Image 1 (tube, one colour):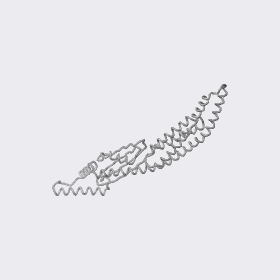
Image 2: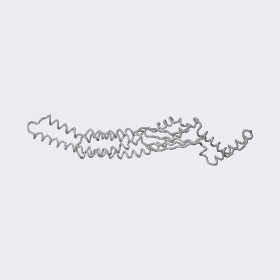
Image 3: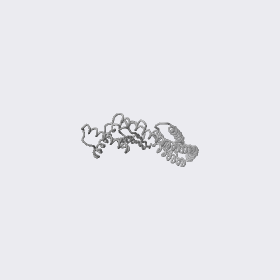
Image 4: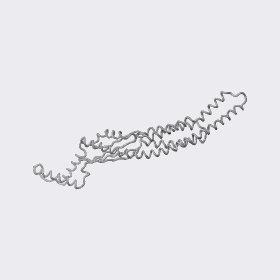
Length: 289
């Protein structure tokens, strides 16, 4: 969910530059930094971001400077010449009695700077800022999409490793069931060796206990279903990050259950490896919008 976008435009009065930066965040958090005369546009700029971004902390920066500050020396000379021509007309009309001095010219330029930079903005200029913000956010979204494709490839790699791990657990389960049957026979033999009549209720209790402790078929089936669902969500468009995080949590929950049920050392090692892979999957999913 990281990215950067920028857009600039210049009109008769202002040169507007909008930057958009985003970093990872569990929800959508928009921070807008804009100076007058466009400070009242902050709610509208937040809406512009919310229309395109669903997750992440997005920082919008708006810089508006007088257009004359971006002009070259020739254009600045032209402005000064027009000022002097205006003063000459005023002299002919008797409004002023002398040419402008260098200090007076600088003072006039400062006044123009204040009026063009801090004066009230009209609807056209406000729309210009909003349109520029849309372009910056679009650039940000494009970069986030490129990052998202990289994340998708990484998620698929982690998912393939996790599927292989779960497959190994399922294969080992078949062997564990056979070993559990042998364990059951041993237990029954011990009971028969105690002497006296064999209590059928005790045998049923031992069987139920062994089955409950060793049978992980349901958990492994749910794991396979969650992995299939994770893969399907990756292929979807739009904001899927939250769903991927929730699915990774469900995968971890099933792995924990398998680990608590099985007593086989090899399966327990496989569960630990699966947890590591699941954590890597969850960390990557948190970066997805």
